[in-house]
Amino acid sequence: MKLSNTSKQNSKSLSSDWVTQGLIDFEYKKYMLLAYLQYTKKQFDQVKLYPTLSELLFHYHNLIQIKENKQFLSEKFPKKISKADFEKLKLTYTSILKDDKIMQEIESVIEFALPKIRESISEGKQIYNWINHHLKIVPIGITPIYFREGYVFLVMNQNKKMKHKVQVYTYKVTLFQMADTKEILRGLNIQYFDTLAKNSFQTYENLKINLIKTNKELPNPATFLLQSSVTCSFENSIFPIAKRRLTEYLTRLEKK
Image (cartoon, rainbow, N blue to C red; front, side):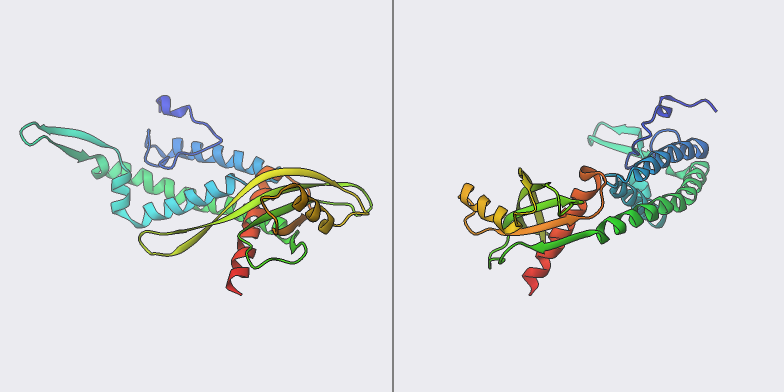
């Protein structure tokens, strides 16, 4: 089967509507998916979790939703104009969803894709759990009553007998309410502040005191140490997991 220009796909990503977009052909969609999963495998082999793991979860839940909700599938499909009603200034659309052959192709693609994506997600979660297990969070000094903003010290695979770098970030918790459920959600904004060198004669409390002296905007900051005993991609793995851990930690503090 001759493929259209839609065959020129970027294997590093899948569009949100990749199942219903472009050429609806099982072999073609299978090729797209396997190329994408090959890329995700390479990312995981390099211990790079994000944004790959988040994308896989999105695609998996999206396929489940399409499979279980025919109306959702109908809305995802492109429409073609069948008649223009110039008197009422309305357009009438005829859905191509009624094509049984196309529906069979889509169902075949979904049945093939779900276990493949689920397998990749499982691999990503194993890596996530491994990194998370080796990530420790401890308060530096006394945590003040107000701890919705402060400092984070991020340290990777330190050697206590040698100098090591401490990446310092400022953090701030923001609260916002969902319009429909009125549920209060928390967001965490983290900004890079400085990189400090720590030797065996210094304590993290000393570093915190020095920061207070130099940054008057935070006179009594909550400060937390996030320590990773594994070395892997900081941007794609350590940092996003550390951010999530800190969010969970602060949420538990508020509930006490």
